[in-house]
Amino acid sequence: MSDYTIVLGPRVRRYRTSVSPLAVAWYLSIGPLLLVACAVAVMFFDRGPELIVIGAATGLLMLAISIVFLAWCTSAYLDLHPHGVVLGRTVLGGRPRAMWFTEIHPASIRVFSDIDTIRPLRGGQRMLYPSWHFSPGADLAVTFLGPDPGGDPAPFRARPPQPVAGLAIFGSREAEQIAAALREGLERGGCPPHLARWSAQFGIQELKGTGLRAQGQIPGKWADWTP
Image (cartoon, rainbow, N blue to C red):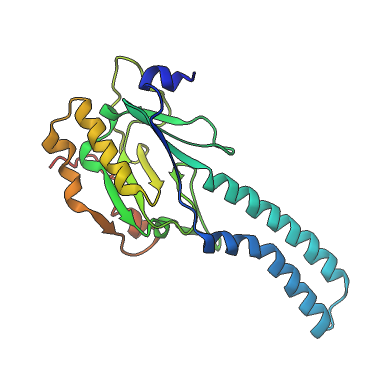
């Protein structure tokens, strides 16, 4: 029995992050495509045969990196408990992040489409931060603001929501169902129904733009969402 089960109650359901087959196919093809490019260079551009050896070694390395990356990001989960939620990864995920429902800002709960657009471009690669629990190519996601992720829930003390650092993002085709479960949990924790369900009016929102522009549309970048 984990500490989270003792504090938050037994796990009711585990949600897994949704996986994009196209994104998986692309990442797994990078290594083989590099090898093919080296073979073409040798055959048609009179390059030395050693280029194939270099290409094969580099391609295998890229394939290994892609497999580990995909295993890491697709292993994200959200555990629903009677009194709160736990976010984590089963592969290289570190310590899971747990919180009471009463530690979630009720007005911050949202469901967005095309969540993959928030990934910024750095050095020619689109970044995916450890605090974002979704896979490349993800579409629907639930977002909400919780406490500072550095601590664990205490039995008799609720931590305040923490702007920026406390933002939680979980990509899932069941994002609407998860958002509804969060609102129900808030009500069970004593949040007035009109506040707990206030954010449901927004339905599924479409993110505009990419990178920082898309990120700026997710509640959690500032401190006041009181309806």
